Each structure stands twice: as structure tokens, then as C-alpha cells.
Image (tube, rainbow, N blue to C red):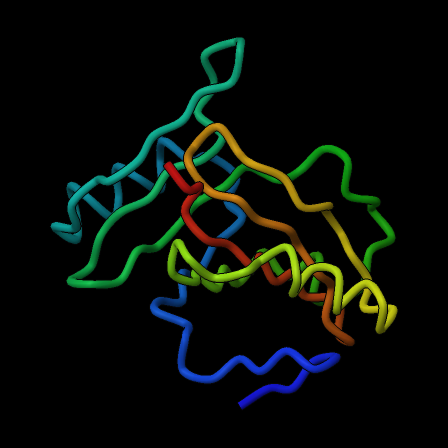
Length: 142
């Protein structure tokens, strides 16, 4: 159980998605799907047609692959440059905005502000004490 500014989070996390920063998302998708037999789940392209985000399914787990963010400073800490981002997915009815406000009031470093993403999540990113990025997300309410 986590108590944050009066907001209690207990066992509402439904899944944890590892997100690996890779040199070539297409190559990673091909390896995991064709070599390891995982089901390809997602493949998103930028305006130039380059795949920047993809995922495969391993049972009930999703492994995400992303291109390096060109806006990340090269001098970022160990965690931010480790190539690993954690995504914690909450149920659709979770009050993510209240959690965001509570974390901001506690001066938790926000790496990416809250917003609705075109791939169907409402999310924001925090930076942990070691520099790792943790995305807190829920599906966008329909």
C-alpha cells in the first residue's frame, strides 16, 4: 500500500509493462516475434514512417520497445540512460489526475506531464531517485 497525500493505492495495479529502449524497434519486433515466437501487438510509426514504438505479448505480459527519445539529455543519470522504462497500468476508472497532483505537490520529478496519448492511454512519467523513468498510465475513458 502506498499513501500519497491522502490517496491510497493498494492492489489497483493490474499490469507492469517493461519498456526497452532499443536502436531499431523493427529489428526488436522481428526478433521477439519471429525468433522467440511472441505475438506482435503494436507497431507505431512517426510522420516519416519510422517505427518508434512497438510491443509483443508474452502470455499476459506486454514487452514494449521504443526508440531513444531525442529530447533526453545525453548527461542524464544512470537510470535514464539504462534503456529501461517501467509502465504501471491502472484500471480505466483510476483517478490518475489526483495521483499526478499528489505527486507534484510532493515535488516528485515529472519527466513528462499528464495527457491523453493517441495510442489510447492517459499517462505521465516520473523520474525515480536513480533516474529511471516510470510511466503511470490508464486507458483513456471512452
